[in-house]
Length: 446
Length: 186
Image 1 (tube, rainbow over the protein chains, first blue to last red):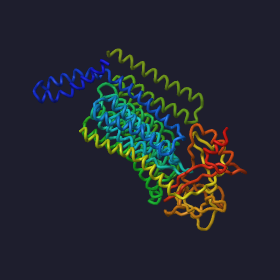
Image 2 (image 1 turned 30 degrees about the horizontal axis):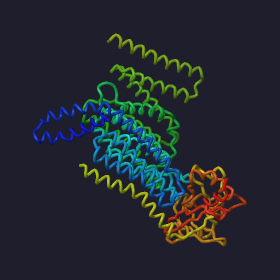
Image 3 (image 1 turned 90 degrees about the horizontal axis):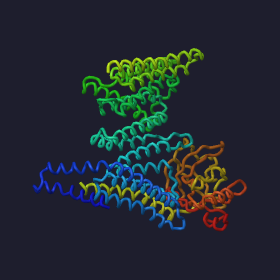
Image 4 (image 1 turned 120 degrees about the vertical axis):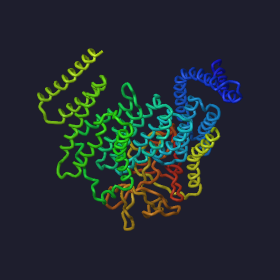
């Protein structure tokens, strides 16, 4: 109880500070010192409190949903409808209270946001059951997401933003194919775009916070899942190019917007990992066996329909973004701080794509070979950069890419067991020797 | 700043309330003013009969005999059907239309896959009947027993108005499902 009185008193005191400064009772420096004093005290305990508030609100919300979902059919339809609105109205009242009185308290904002979002979902689903509404789960998710996103902005809830992203991915998996007719995933990109301004606000506020890092990773992963679905929807063989663009974009964003003196930011690491994976995956020949659907003929482009055309546009957006971002970084920031080979990924993919697309006959082998060379070059570059900056992790990642490539080729090609065995020994020995040399070199220099 | 936030929240709050409210409004209109049609249920696969908390419904009238005036669209196309009553008073599809039409005998459907040459399949906008947790198991049994080959004794009463179709109740042996379950305790 003493604690809560204390917090209340602190809140009151902080509210009084601007007035006291204006009246000349204390100096602005004094006011700042008081703010700092109480600010540091609050920060230490607030993280645990936020976590507890989130867990508590999630549990209570889940309980309310289960109780209400019981579908009490002893009650009349209007009464059941009224019950459905009850949690929503209570949650909205709580949100108003928080906006008026607890706007600066993160735990309060997170709690109010969780209740409100859960109450919206509860109201819609209960009304749907009461009135035998036949909508699909996807259409329910769609409305729920659109009604929830403003709450993320207004109550500034990053937990809510994360949940919203997960919800958008759930929507993506719930869109049903009606008798084999594929449903368009384009709306997913609108859901994602609606969250971007919130992400930019968080980024500008504190780019180095764990909150921004987690949101960045969630955004990147969600975009990758969405891109997979979009490529699958159009079936225009654009997926290779789109994923190359996405991996490079994430990598470049990590390097340019999250610069670090020591090591890599998680976003840059994720992007680098993506570039490595895409490079190795694209070295498989079947990935370049195009089913020619989108040709240069205008008629076939039209056959995609508007949704298909938009989906193709979205896929092209990623390699274009990667190229613009890289060129901008080179022109604006001078000396290149990122891996040039990684930046080349969309270009190499475009060359391979055009080669397969315009070549007559079976041309997938050349494209796969190009990626064998590219993945090898990328592995070597990462290894060399790792050695240069004395990063064991980075050097080993370079080795891992080379080893991954080698292992894939062993399984991919018709080599005998003896040849494969020798190959594995060579790759493994390479790992060991490189690490021994690396550690020795580091020991002598230090 | 606070008043600005409150105004924004008022707009959001109204939107959150208006979505379920508009659903209620539209459905109440249909349930009060719509014309009642009885749709005889088709035999069901027992595995398919109940999924959690609703009875999955299939209808005889979803199979439309082939005739001159029916236009098959691609699967999944939205179409409008006019309804008519057969000799027993059950609803049947009369015409298929690609363009929207109005009336208390018009329903929005989707084109499905035909299994035979001389018929079309349409998919009605209602295929599940929500039941309470306690009734779920009994409802499944009752529906299955009365909706199989040789004993088709179930129908859904549906109100239709301005292309909106609202299930009013599921009838088994001419009794609403809840009354039937009370009269036939498990």
